[in-house]
Length: 167
Image (cartoon, rainbow, N blue to C red; front, side):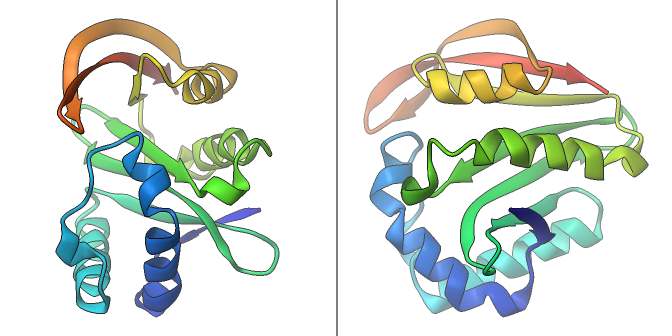
């Protein structure tokens, strides 16, 4: 497993990954717009991510296996260099869960971003998502606050836990 920066050449493999895991992801997060699931939609997504990367507001990474297949994604978003903080998000494809990939990816990302001199990473996780809570705790994140009815997923209010990691 390795992390690498998203690139324009990932268009077709990323589209395949997202379509293949659409139902799995949508069980946990709000669905993306229907237009996302097309060559043009993913191309626009990659362009936006790379634009935010160039302006140092995002770090869009892919989690790939030894053969170069995308097995997940991990991102820092809303990077704030003034407050030296960023929000962590990740997703692992359904066929690749329960292998410790998320734990390893978060650990690797933390190691790779040392040069950014961030002080804190922030992550939100559904109160029901025990696996993600374990991933965060394993990597030094601490639960800071519970947020009732934080998001609506498939029309249902979901409680979330806010986690912080001091770097």
